[in-house]
Image 1 (tube, one colour):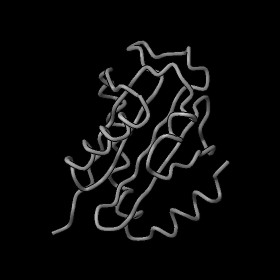
Image 2 (cartoon, rainbow, N blue to C red):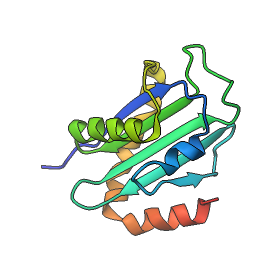
Image 3 (cartoon, one colour):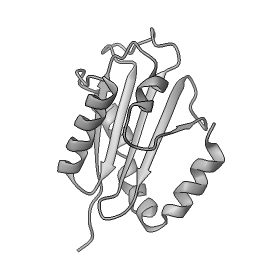
Image 4 (cartoon, rainbow, N blue to C red):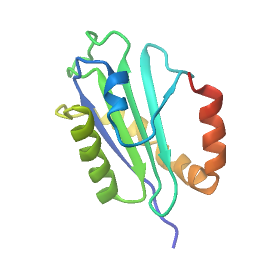
Length: 137
């Protein structure tokens, strides 16, 4: 039976440098500049027995927030809701980002589109590494 990818989406107001925060993470997180627009975006992918894709983005001007009040979005995609929750908690503890704002359902649907791409990352992790090397800044 094929596994189904699941994406957990969180939002926060974070009034500090995301760059400094991700440096405190135990995961190897790369800054990605392609199609980032007015946000600073970081990604991490780990393969193996329990693969996951983590994406975190923050408004370049951290004073700019959305109407619900967030300036940072976070998502983690894996094959396990339990793993997604544990990775979210770990990221929060290591970086100081408190995910205390409910993301709008439209944002959750948009970001959850990662679900259909995730199996491609799992099948070909080298392609993910090459992609990140190409866009790493």
